[in-house]
Amino acid sequence: MSWDDPSVDWAAADLVAVRSTWDYHRRCPEFLAWARRTQEVTRLLNGAEVFAWNADKAYLIELASRVPVVPTRLVDDADLVTRLAEGIADFGAVVVKPRTGAGGIGVVLAATVDDQRLDNLVAAPWVLQPLVESVRTTGETSVHVFAGRAVSRVDRSVAGEEVRVHESYGGSSRAVPLGEETSALAEATVAAAAQLLGADLTYARVDLLRWQGGWVVSELELIEPGLYLDVDPANAQRFAALVAGVT
Ligand SMILES: Nc1ncnc2c1ncn2[C@@H]1O[C@H](COP(=O)(O)OP(=O)(O)O)[C@@H](O)[C@H]1O
Ligand SMILES: [Mg+2]
Image 1 (spheres, rainbow, N blue to C red):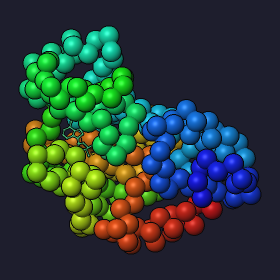
Image 2 (image 1 turned 30 degrees about the horizontal axis):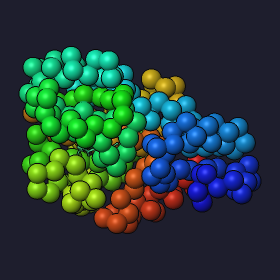
Image 3 (image 1 turned 120 degrees about the vertical axis):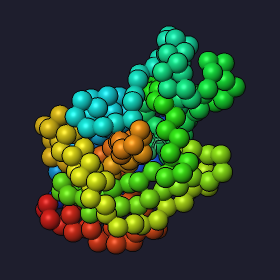
């Protein structure tokens, strides 16, 4: 079922779980308004307030007070040049990406304030982070956390010169066994977010990168769980069991 299908009677459902809303980042206000309306008439897992918080990568700055996170700064049109200069001085190469984004859209690298790659910036506002070089070697790892517990893990790697792990940019993914350290950090991240929000987080995906000798959070996904069913079909049963368990 599509969230924007006006013919769906959401009130007729005992529970609504968002699965894959690959357009919400382009229609964020509309999607969040749907979520608010829907949770007035039925139970919406994670819920509209959680979605609104999670749709803006500024949440990484709040999380950073509780768990290790890729250093993240907010950047707007008015301070782009200053913030770029500061970021490059502090970190060397940086990544600038939209505060509300998905699928790797608008991820831009810059090594100087007049780097030509900045021509590809999407509209403000953005977050600025150091370019985490290990994404090219170790890659990114994604841990699914259902009902507070790490349940599955997928390692994702890049192709060629790309830093984005997404398949659309040539990246590849494979299911791997859970690891102690990555599971602990993923669970701690979800617990921290639940506490910050005062909300029940039924499902989450935590993306981790290696930075300065340890794992750090690069993204916490609380809207569309991104189950990677192509590489880990068993996530379908895990998610179904989770949903069945909360009804
Ligand atoms: N600071 C960074 N350093 C290295 N790679 C990054 C960085 N930020 C993003 N990337 C790469 O770009 C991809 C997309 O960025 P991400 O923050 O996950 O946004 P999205 O919401 O689009 O998935 C990541 O999966 C990673 O491969
Ligand atoms: Mg991502």
